[in-house]
Image (tube, rainbow, N blue to C red; front, top):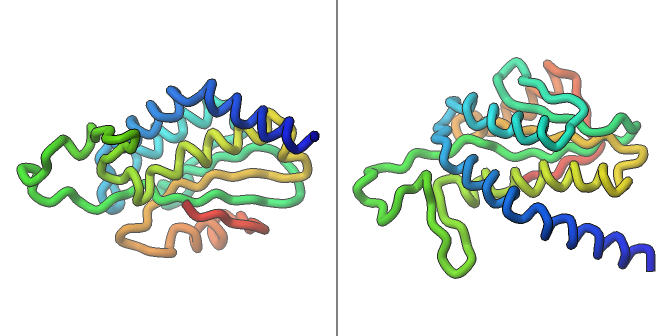
Length: 172
């Protein structure tokens, strides 16, 4: 019964925050973030983490954004890249790829599925897990990074240069 209560609490909280989560995704997709040009989109993620009460938010040496919730021994890292490939010829798009569109309940925009789309769930999910007491003994991290032109370098730098060694990693 306790597990069902937790599931119901999660469902209720997500429903309450649905509009904010969707608006956050739309904001992320509205910010062009080609290759290594991720500062603006990282600043938007930073603002959301601060709004949700992350314990610490910082930029690493490569300019990626990192947020932390909790101070437990076990380290859980959510990793998603916030850069995207280009849009090609803007005239070839039927809609503004940064504004996006909703069709049959699905949001389409540059970066919505690769990979900005996982970011709101990761950030809001960490805050929700904290609020429900599900992170006891765990430190949760969100890592928004560049990947399109340097696959694997950003996570490697987080481990080697920043010294963050997660026990578990979830990739968006």
